[in-house]
Amino acid sequence: MTGTLLSIRGLTKAYPGVVANDSVSFDIQEGEVHALLGENGAGKSTLVKMIYGLVKPDSGTMTWRGGEFAPPEPRAARATGVAMVFQHFSLFDALNVAENVALGMENPPSMRDLAAQIRSVSENYGLPLDPDRIVGDLSAGERQRVEIIRCLLQDPKLLIMDEPTSVLTPQEVEILFKTLNKLKSEGTAILYISHKLEEIRTLCDHATILRLGKNVGTCIPSETTARQMAEMMVGDTLHTPTRSAKEEGAPVLRVNDLSLSSANPFGTRLKNISFTVHAGEILGLGGVAGNGQDELLAALSGEAPTEAETITVNDKPVGHFGPNERRELGILAAPEERLGHAAAPDMSLTENALLTGAIREKLMNNGFVDWNATTKFAERIISAFDVRTPGPTSAARSLSGGNLQKFVIGREVLQNPQVLVVNQPTWGVDAAAAASIRQALLDLAAEGAALVVISQDLDELMEIADHFGALNEGRLSEIRPALGLTIDEIGLMMGGADASEGAAA
Image (cartoon, rainbow, N blue to C red; front, side, top):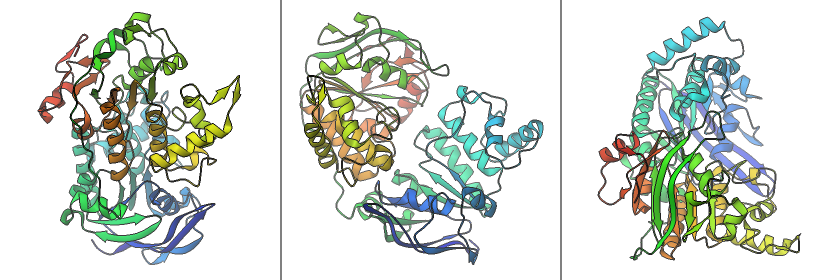
């Protein structure tokens, strides 16, 4: 480390009803990996948006190598040397890698020259990438490489990364860390946002912790336990999810030889999937993103109807039912994409509570919405799942990703489902909120519900699942007891080594 690259002093940004950043100060050194930690809604996203020129601070200053730094837009931040890899990728599926990279450049070279640059940079940093491949055909990890290469072609001095490993396999995380350490050795500073605290301990040199918009402390992650960092973030003792002893009940959900084409031209076809979930059981399904997870949730939720006998609940064929008919029977779902699929961005939380709660919560009477009951339902979700928001009239898009996730999961859990299917239940959620969501899922199972939890977080699945299976190219591995499974065995299952044509529990 050769000196201070970016110095932040007293940065403040307020929105109606909430102070997102309250006089935040810290420094980022050249050639360091600096973690920015905090609960959902602590102000991390607002802070990095100010650094990147997306948001203008109300007060406070930033200096870059001693000179004034106040980028009015991202173009100015990039020109200074700031690059950012966002949590949600901004890529066009129908274009190839080089075309997507070109769209993010001010003055892109010819496609031939750009393709050569992409090959050179990707090989130099251990992120192999073919510039001619169509993005829609890439895995989630490969898509992230596109975003990173696009940034590296700018020769950044500060690289901001927001939840970069949320869609990666353990092997892909290892590759990414090698790349980041190479950048660090070359003098590039990295501002790293993640809720995976063991990763922070492995990778980062220093950490700044935000709580309710304020800088509440710093630490050296390698000298601090994950629990200590989590408790600094929440300002309280961290709750660890606990399982209650339970007897496995009768079969509730049966999937029988399910094959289904994807509605997405770049999606994955499901192939001969069979499994059974009993009352009180949590079936955990792992796998790298893009191996049929979205398609399976669509089939189970009723968004993609199948032949009637393909899916049964309590021996009743429901494969031909749509989402509303399934909700009436107690079959609920929470998809991975929270903004746009699980929740309508511009609708209020009250309106979003109505979208899936109308039937089971009896929020409509003779075709008219009971807004009083709907508001009370939204308030109950906000209270029970500690959703940080000014109130139920707030638009879904105004919430941080983690707080919206808590609302989406809470909305389904509080409807007392018989069957609940969730995809990525704690994606982008801080340690305390993740523990709370996992406990809610365990409690739901303890009350007799049958749960299917689809997740790329293997630690999460091993913590809550009774049985485990892995999706690979639309096929499901043998279902096995989660207790005693090793990482090697899980890796083989995720890689398709024992994927079977319809293994059943």
